[in-house]
Length: 195
Ligand SMILES: [Fe+2]
Ligand SMILES: [Fe+2]
Image (cartoon, rainbow, N blue to C red; front, side, top):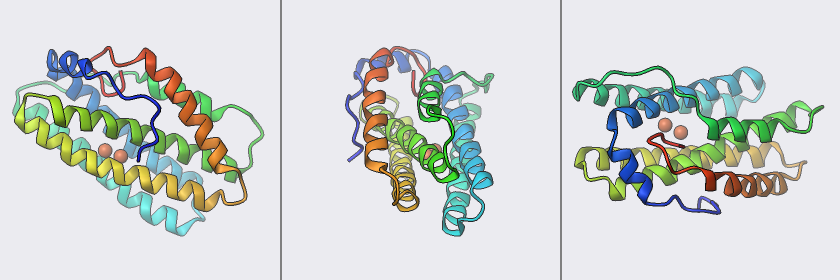
């Protein structure tokens, strides 16, 4: 359903379990960035009422996720560290920004596809965590988030198709899925959500 080319190596979960404070810090900032990204899309595409309405809700959900992760960090006596760079997301961002002189619609569609891709991979990572992590509370937590991020994936992809009906959205999406399938081979080795 997520259209991903490659599944994460389950050994990544063992790396995550070796440093929960690190994964939780990274995860907290992923949620913050997801909220910020949704707000940026709203700012750039103000005239689309349905998009604005849905992305306000989505941004609120991401902020709620940020709060949930922050609460877990506090409960466990951990400290929220500095924001971590997300090389995976930066690579996807660069890819979807390629090919200058885009119309506003093209730029919007590419931003929506970029967002859908991150939701898809995050969802896959959360699913793996929920299935394999030994910590029961975190397993439940990641299952809950997996469902929410799957909904976001559908929202972003749905809007890309709706507003890009005059563009070849399927080709753009397939190109991105193929690119992601290539770069993800270099990840799965760090205790970060996309690392
Ligand atoms: Fe989220
Ligand atoms: Fe999300």
